[in-house]
Structure formats: C-alpha cells, structure tokens
Length: 278
Image 1 (cartoon, rainbow, N blue to C red):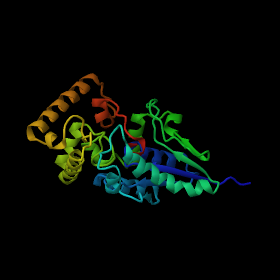
Image 2 (cartoon, one colour):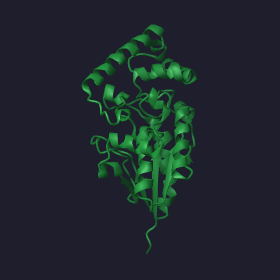
Image 3 (cartoon, rainbow, N blue to C red):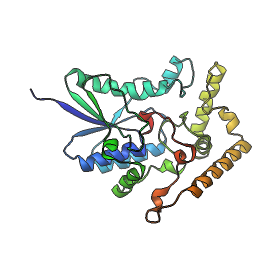
Image 4 (cartoon, one colour):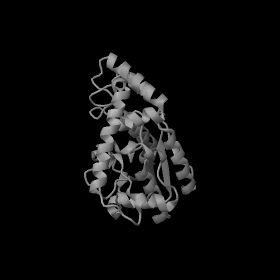
C-alpha cells in the first residue's frame, strides 16, 4: 500500500521559521512543502511585509490559516482576562487549534503529516509542538543539522531576504501586545505604532476593571509605563544593559552586520511560545 505523506512548515513571521523555510527549499528541494501562516489579526505590519518577501523567494503562496474566532471573541470567552505566561490561551486558540483543524482531515484520511519546526541547535531547552496523533511527525532540522543563531542570520542574508524590519526595534514576531515583550519593546511599540499601543492599553483597562490579575507588562500598567518620565527611565536602563553586552562581546570583523544585539542578548532567552515567535 502506498504511504500518503504531507509536509508542512509553519511560519510565525520571525527569523527562525523564515530561515528554516529557505533552508528546506535549498537543501530538500524534492519535498513538496506547504508553508502556512496563522494570522491572529493582531500582527505587526512589518510581519506581513516580511512574509511577502519570503513568499517571493519560495515561489509559491503561503497558506493563510485563519482562526474561526478572533482574539476579541476569545477574550470575551475568558471573561476579559488577558493571556499571560501562566494562561497562554491566545497561543492555544489562535495558533495551535487552527493548525490542528487544518491537518485533522489529512490525519483522519491516513496521511502521515511531517511538520518542520524551527528550533535551533543552540536551543536545547526548547521543545516543539507535542504531537497527539501517531501520524503527525515533528521534525527539528536545525537541531539535527547543527544550525545555530549565527547560521540563521547567514541563511537570511545570503538568500537576499534579510531580517524582518521589526528587528530594528523588537526581538521577535507575534501579536502587537504579546505579554512576552520587554518593557523597552512596549516603549518602542508606542513610538512606532501608537494605535496598536492604545488598543493594547484599552484591552488592559477593561481586563483590570473586570478583575483580571494580569497586566501586559509585569508590575505596571501600560498607562503607567507610557508616562514620559517612565519611558525615558526604561530607555536609559536598556541602553546601560546594551553597553554592558557590547563590552563583553568580541565582534566578528568579517561579518559585523551579523553581530547585532537583540533583546534576548540583553535580557536572556525568553520562554516564549514557539508557534508565535519562531
């Protein structure tokens, strides 16, 4: 009996999953891979621009998986309680469930579905999606082939795609109001996309007024964080951290553009959601 197989690769709009798509296209051209993006409707405009460039490189359209219900619907279902690191209902309802709904007919029909996840070789602490169906096979090509963070940069640069523009001010993709953002990223969101910041602040006010124990940024509301003197304090503290990292790092004179300092270098690796940020 012929084994029917399907190959899929999820894109978050982030650098790692984009680099993996390029890597698979270049190193495994015999595989017919469906590249997909699950749109929460709360993405940065820079994400859509970057996905367009990637689509051009791959030479095929990206499949858009849209949740049956948007963020606003699920927020009401959770009594206006904001998602948080403790209750990541946004990832479950807006990213994982649409993927599961999409592949379910193939699995039910006997297909073996191979899903490729962009977890690098220098991320031993991070795991991919835990498959609950015996025919859903999760593969980690970067970990298996020894591709680390500098190699991801090289893949994006050499392909001509480059980095997403939001890396000028933010460390990863995901919703505009992702709770994994550092305070400096909230400050930059307010400066770059004030309308998105205002929307996040409105969500937070409704949630807190309704008894939610969480604010988007730990320890203070966005209303407090957005005060001019507080924003300046956050910028000053961030710059001090960046200078300390620079002082410790030996720059590669051959490829200085690949030695950029991102938020994870400054604050440590975040325990972010793989489907949203990789």
